[in-house]
Length: 96
Image 1: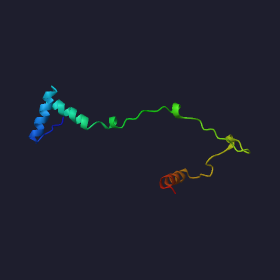
Image 2: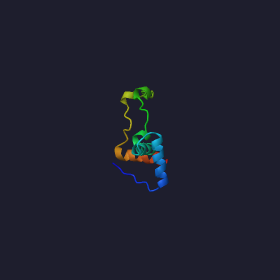
Image 3: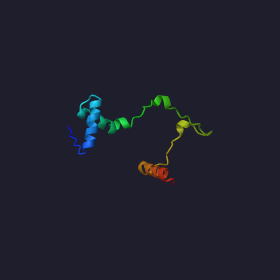
Image 4: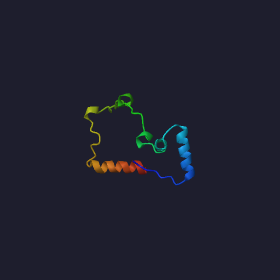
């Protein structure tokens, strides 16, 4: 439980007056005000979840005339995946 001390008499009177106007206890009214002003972080950033089945698709690559797609080995030149991915990230962000 948290106790809020209001040192400004005018503010205290306004809060008490409004709580009475709405027919609520002053403590409950202050709790509602704080809930409005300080919402939960989960409620602030809510996004609609998308289904991958609705937005995904299969990529079909056409093979060159002298090779079959099944026989290709993409990224065969990569020997160190860690350094390769770091370089990719640097180039993507720094536009090198």
